[in-house]
Image (cartoon, rainbow, N blue to C red):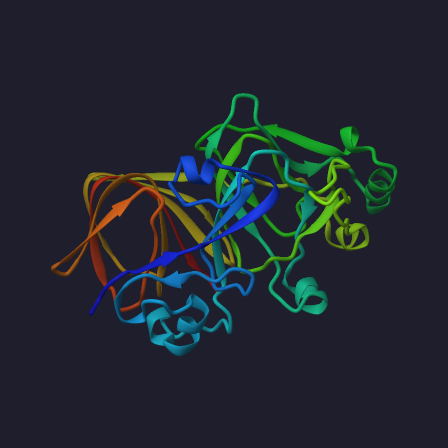
Length: 315
């Protein structure tokens, strides 16, 4: 049967987490410090489970290896993308992620280029996006002497903003921000600065200064420029496309029909509700649902009032 693969993600407690994943998306939280929901993931630190059909109960990692036809017989040995929702009730650490070459050599996993769609942001919310150092020597000196106010570039954010964060970019998500993150399937993070705050055991979290200095780039980050296309009841916004992934925002108000142009699609409903029609089968959708349209779904239709973040791998 041609059907979507609905997914159950995993929740992750974080020192900076809160409870918005429960209040906004109705996920069942077991901590008021819940920072992340790994919605579509085959990463070993949080594997999503299939919720429907003949693969019900199977992990996405296992399905990817056992049923390559569902994913268009992909080249990548591991499921290449990871979709998260993050609740920053406090500042995340100032951090950087390595590229593939460095990560594979030092961490035995993919690098981490990512992007953020801002779902909610409190008034005055900010992120750190880049730094001011012009040379590696200046960068190292400012990090080692703690010149954070001079080094870090702060940017104000609001709901609906989008940021492209390639590997090597100094960054941090600020207090009061809820985002959907599309990223390479990696859990490697190098902390540069953590605001000198203790964890729940009273200890400072580990920093990774050597690795951070190794991988930080000097160029100012260049954000992508979203492109809108209105077709009937669909507003399609291309948010970013690079060597790793392509990400869209689709806003459907009425009905919109689609045909497959990628091997498979990752979809997250971020607002509204409606239906997904594949052949003669209808699936109800609501805010907080996450699913994959596998390779054998050649066409489909959305109806209702829905906003989705949609991505696919370019690997």
